Amino acid sequence: MPEEILRKFEEMGKCRIVEGYGMSESCQQITSNSGHHTRKIGSVGVPWVDTDVLIVDDIKGQKIMPVGEPGEIIFRGPQLMREYWNNPEETAMVLRDGWFYTGDIGRMDEDGFFYIVDRKKDIIISSGFNVFPREIDEVCYGMPEVQDACTIGVPHERRGEVAKAFIVLKPGVKLTKEEVIARCREKLAPYKVPSEVEFLDDLPRTPVGKPDRKSLRALVAEQQD
Image (spheres, rainbow, N blue to C red):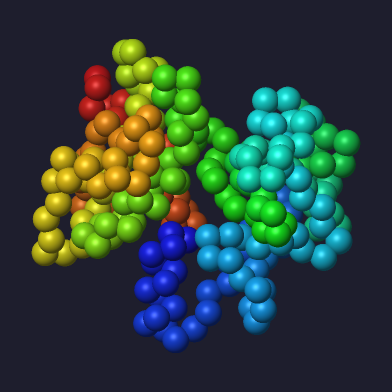
């Protein structure tokens, strides 16, 4: 959950949001913050009971990454599925020596708290640099005029890919493409700043309500045809 939305929700609801991390293949949580004790906003917490979690390199998945460095999240524990039904090929891709390779990019801090950076398949490679769309989304959500934001990579002749931010504004406010880019320059390294900005009335969403980057990529492809 974007930090700006989390803080506003807690203020309005007089409650505490506890973020965790899990997936269908884990049947339940992999990590979680505490509902009563230490919590780090922006983190998905620490590993669940009897669960091992590592951050490994996202190429071969064999090297454990240093603290603070991003890589692919892998885990093992009693909640892990046995296999994909009638799909041994896919099972072999994600289950290796008892570890499940999630396809999520994350990092671990010095206190053992984990952070989701992005989906491995959503990383934008611009001029040889890895750009994580979620980092750009967070900056956009911090703009008071922005209701929703979602960033994807789009083809670029020289840089391979560049970031394009799709923005949904709050009712009755105005914001220009130039203003979005200028504010991103204040918060992001130059190679992470979106080159393109498009305003939409609403974002396409997946069945579980998350912004649908796949549909946005299809939209860009249609526009280029």
